[in-house]
Structures are given as structure tokens and as C-alpha cells.
Length: 245
Image (cartoon, rainbow, N blue to C red):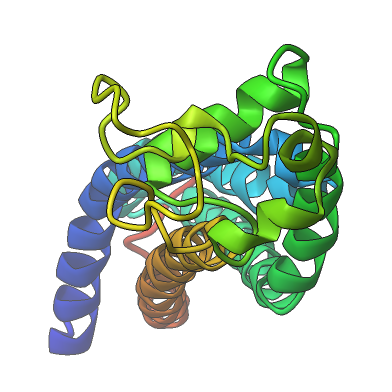
């Protein structure tokens, strides 16, 4: 047997096994991205930010099937199976490139969209409505206060209507009764803005997602090369037979 074919089969078997692991990792990344969106969906108006995550999860599901198909087709030296394997890899490769493109597009729009939406939500804060709950959760989770910093609250109806104080979710220690939310107590409240922190968090999630997508796209590229080598060599000898044989 040609050394190139042996090497290609070994690489293809390894890649097929890696697809199962890759599918699990991609599924985790996709679910984590959706979870990040759900945690802060009040500050993200457009649902198109979920497109990369949905594509990743769909690709993960297909990759479990693809790993099985690759192993069986390689071991049986099935031309039909390997051709089907190549087609599916090409489709997944295209899907991952599309997801990568969406990530790049959204990454450049995060800050502008967050600033507009976050400013609107903070202006609606009254301590009781759903927007207020989202703001409190955000400030407590990210340990921030206001859109840009604690002084961003000055222009809100809440600040003027509540004795010029910020919400208690800005307090570093909410059980400390000394924190009344007054700006004259900078040592007791968070001073970093929520916009910068949330933007950094989402940028990190997207960067991690793009890195994973790029890594598995490279794996698929080598998988396609291996299939091409095996299939081309197989046409010169009679050892290959249909998958149903």
C-alpha cells in the first residue's frame, strides 16, 4: 500500500475521532455564547448576535455523525462513504466560515449598540420594573456603576427623584448600611462604568468563539486533503468498494 495513502488514512482516522471531541467543544462554546446573550439580552436589541452560536451548535451536531461516517468509510475504504464525508466536511467548513464572518461583523458593532441600548435601559430605571432588575443584576455581576461611570446616573430620572443617589446595586457591600448611594462616598460604591466591562466581556466571548471556529476549520481543511489523497490513490487500484458492499 502506498505510504501516502497509509499516512492519509491514519490522519483521517485521527481527525474523525477528533470530530467527536470537537463536536462536544463546539456545543459547549455555542451554549456558552447563548447563555451570555440571555444574561444580558436587555442590553442587546438585535437577535442576530445569536446567529454564530446557532450555527456552531448545528455544526456540532453534524460533527458527531461526521466522526462516525469518517471512521467507517476510512476503515472500509469506501469511495462512496469518503465522497459523502468530503461533501459534509465542505458544508461544515462553509458554515464555520460564515459563523466566523458573523463574529467579525458583530464584534465591530458591539460597543455602539451597547452604548445606545444601555443608556435607554438605565434611563428607564425606577427600582421596580424589569429594566431595573436587569440593571441591578448587571451592576452587581460586573461590579460596575452607571453606563460610563457612577456619574452617568446624574442625568437619569432616578438620581433626581431619589435625593441625588445611585441605586444600592452600585454599593461594593450592600449589607453595609453606610453605603447610601451618594456620589460623595466613592470608596463605598463602584466607580467603573458598565459599558466598558460588558463590552470587554462580550468581546472576550466572541474572540474565544472565533478562535475555536478557526481551529476546527483548520482541522477540517486537513481532513479534506486526506480524503482527496485517499480517493485519488484509490482510483488507481481496485481495493475500494461501495459502502453498502
